[in-house]
Image (tube, rainbow, N blue to C red; front, side, top):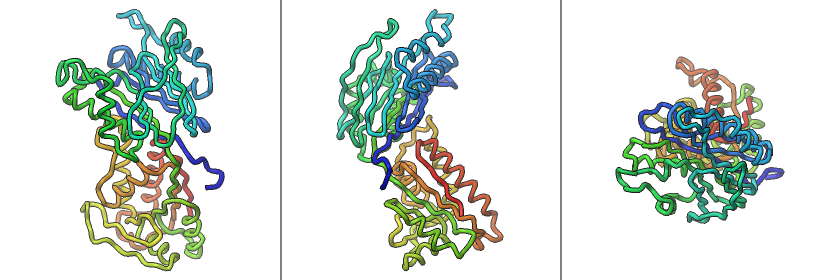
Length: 390
């Protein structure tokens, strides 16, 4: 891949609200500026509206300032001066974990009163060297980061270590137990979001589905760049079919075709044929096809519609469904490629009217809207998405 960075930073998080509260007292802010990704997890004092305001202000301020390379002392001072003071307790208080890291895995972590971050390295959890700093009478810990490929850094609010207190566990879930759980359950290739969800779901189980504290887990992962080209529909000008497919097939990328007509065009160009599967893993999703030289071939609009539903669910920070896709229907296979594996996605969107859709409530506009909404959700997942129209 010429002139492309080999690695990139992937991030994701999930949150549990304190039982009975509509708003979460934790907040996560993320920003990508050039080669650097900044993530801040803040935990506001208490729970509910006040905590939500405190954590939101803290995360947004710190993320904005740190992503612009402003000194941490100034960042912390700004937060202290900005937070509203709680009338009941007389303090303005929000803990935080701040990650600022490059696509090469170099950066730093600052922690203020949150549980100590965990590094998942080469299949095992480990501690990191922390240096104590005094920033305006606050004890802030700094860790220099040097992540290697597939390393995952997890930060969390104290709802994780409080999980199970007075219920399943007498004294909560201590750090060694959390690390052991991750060691036993993280699988190779899991995304940052999948690992964050794994830990948060375990906390929810310990709380017996009634969290006694806001509980948030965020993760960043250094991973290899994986490009995916996805062709959706044939071009308007049939004379340009070959040029369109040639462009789609360029480069060292995974290649996916959505739609029967598109599959036929690609197979013809590759001098092969489309073989359709007779398996129906999901009765609501049409079967997939097979084209030699193509990684995945699916039906078009119906499969994309299900993919959009899956992307909305995947993005929900409160949905604790495992972020892995083991079903073999076209939409689930697409979701695994695009949500869990891909980092850079290029859509080749043909705007030709499909004669097979005549008389059906399906038109080109619907297909374009589906693609655009899916692309928007992929960007929210932190993917780099490009759309080419033809």
